[in-house]
Length: 292
Image (cartoon, rainbow, N blue to C red):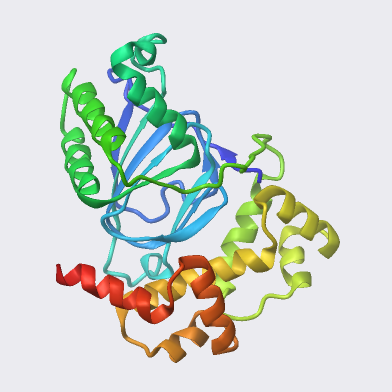
């Protein structure tokens, strides 16, 4: 893909950036940057793209994104409505791998941190109690000063490095091209797909959005994402179905069609293929976690 290079700003008195975002449109594009990103969604939900991985994100999620790994968090449409009374609450830290000095990560005591940042080049979903501990540290970082900032960030990374249940996101073979041209094309494809996935999207239609021929579109999309556009749409639809299952307001057959599938058999097949669970098992597992 052709992500947009994003310049991450920081205050001159600090060596890395920490901020709180309360708007859904902050950096709301497919982008990358040389800084590592540690992010916590205290409020908000939508669709998460990291490398070639697509899934839902929700309140409570914590993700570590390695340097130059393209990513994009697209909040649900309800956050963009003029009459909306809901807003996200996101805490995010950006730091260069060498902000503490070029030799720091090579110290024997820090090899676990160096290994973590290497693994994070695929993106890492932080889970369990570790997620909650990191969220508290990120919140403290917002108001910390002087070297306390560095201590808190290192503590967060230490906790993540010790976690046994980190979930890599992007596939090992994912390649990304950092060229700047065509950066708007992939954003147009993503944005259009997220708005219209509930109905069939014809190849000629999405190729027109990308302003290339249908044959060229197929080659372009497959070479950049390692998947066909049909696979891409299915992953978005399954992600939306997961959201509806968690909300538990519709029957499984109803949410099948609400998610853009035209028959229940294909919905069940693709849902299980992507999540390794049936829709009912997915819903029961989530409800069981709430009861704990």
